[in-house]
Image (cartoon, rainbow, N blue to C red; front, side, top):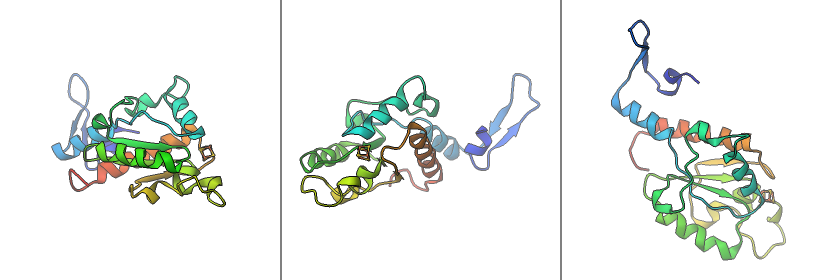
Length: 171
Ligand code: SF4
């Protein structure tokens, strides 16, 4: 995608020596930079996490989206990718991790389990019925059992759109 498509209202000046120049407001440039460097939290819960891990490997290469810097501490993260089945025991840990992330923060529910409990929706006492059941607001839902890495990238691009269109610095 061309940079002028990623920054709404940006203009290209083509005929300058040394290469093109992009003109845009600083607010739009900052939002574009923020959307292009979303740092996810390093954690996974079940099978969908394997797809997330594959997305970070060389075949799919999540670094192309600036989102390859998986951090080990929630204090250094922008985005939580809830990847996998949330057991009741894990639920409190997921919520604690979310609360430890600084604002602005975003959440992606990767896979049917993270969206609604998936195949464990019925007749299971040990599974949380989706990320929002924990009181964690989800910005992007990525359905599938499991979704492929390409699906994760599509969701990531949707999240980038959300970040670029945000009107305020924090949610
Ligand atoms: S959605 Fe399917 S692949 Fe993903 S964690 Fe649940 S059972 Fe596993």
